Image 1 (cartoon, chains in turn blue, green):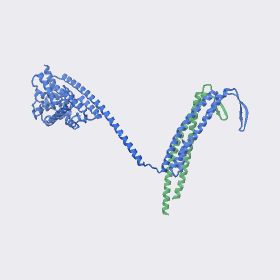
Image 2 (cartoon, chains in turn orange, purple):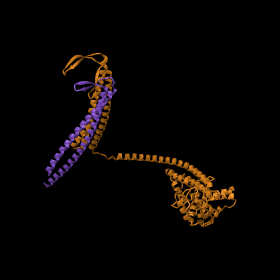
Image 3 (cartoon, helix red, strand yellow):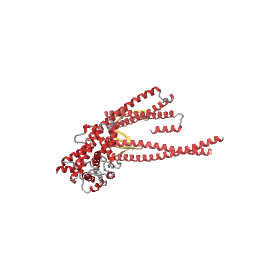
Image 4 (cartoon, chains in turn purple, cyan):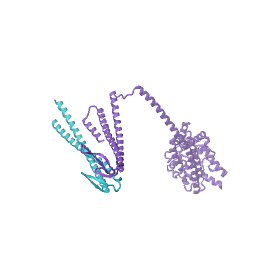
Length: 466
Length: 126
């Protein structure tokens, strides 16, 4: 309100001793102004009501007998003649001739306008009154000495209530967390299964592609299948790991996490990080997504098994991991799924031996598959190599799969793109075929790149068919 | 020194008061315009509700002059536009005056400080 503001402005300039008192003065003045307006408006409304009544009664008679005011002091008896012709002032010196009924309608509208203004004034009055009340409250507190300090009792009371509330809140949060964790956990398990299915499908497709590309090289198949199994293993592992999460043997899992970490070299383009997976609840989803992406593109990645020691350690870890998996969740291992790398090898060996009817070239421990680093070998290759190397190492002791392989592998990994087809496959095949025991893997790699890679398994299968 | 300051002070105070008065007058005329605007809006609404054969009159001085309804409507609309234009102009004027007032207040404050310092000095000397 401008007037109220004026009042406030003026009193500000005047200044007074106690600001609180001054504030109260302002507020009361503002309240008074609003009250005045309200009074005026109610009077208007009453007048309009009376006018309306008069208008309704006027056309009852053709002419009314009335006492007409004459000047300021006299009345004259007279008549009101044209009882239905009423000149209405609309505002701003505009008149309109209306009948009694029409005039009554105009009055009705005016009354409505009054009501709206009254409502606004009421709201304003409420606001100003609330200010007044607050100021009065402050004044009272001031007079009482502004005892903001709580009494000890109040304080303790409050503290207890606070504790209760905090407890409840924490419980609620814990419940929420659990609920969300369980949900995500269930979801994650299902997702895991689906992902594994997808991976297997991918693998099949890859194999088909490879078959189209070239026949006769058994390595690729081997690699694919091995990878597949490894993936299954991994999936198993992951699914196994996830359910227990961190509740069961967190330490072991920790170790497993480390052991599971196939890729050792930091150069690996993509690292399949199991540890990432073994995060509780929410983290799972994100990492699983990563894993999903990873697995979709590539089944598995190994850091180049550069040294025999590395291979050995990784092999051991793998063995540990596999055994752990077997321990942890025997139910999850299906007949088709291999529980340890060694089993994979044995399986495939038996698989290859059946068709060929004899010890396949791969019976002797597969040498490191990848000799040549240049090729963008799929992870599969590397994995396979590692496994083969492991076999070699396990069964034949320290092997020559030597240091030569390691730099190759590392460089390979560097270039590592997850491709279904890679030169490494070839190499593996060659090395496998050329055989094992051969410490000089390095020599073979370069020559491998000539022909199309065919997995060993494929080769075996082809042999079988034949 | 102090006397000079005091004179200056008085001058500034007068200036400030003048500005304030102007400000107030502008504010009041703005209020007036505001009420006229609401009134004319009401008239416009009522005129729109009239039938085409209704008689409209305008009070010009002591004379009631019959007006055409359409003409009346147009006149009222024009008046409303004029009023809104005036309102905007006055709003701008209010802003300017407000700024002027602030400037004057600052000047006054500075002068007051100077005065006080001078008085303190005089008191110290004495």
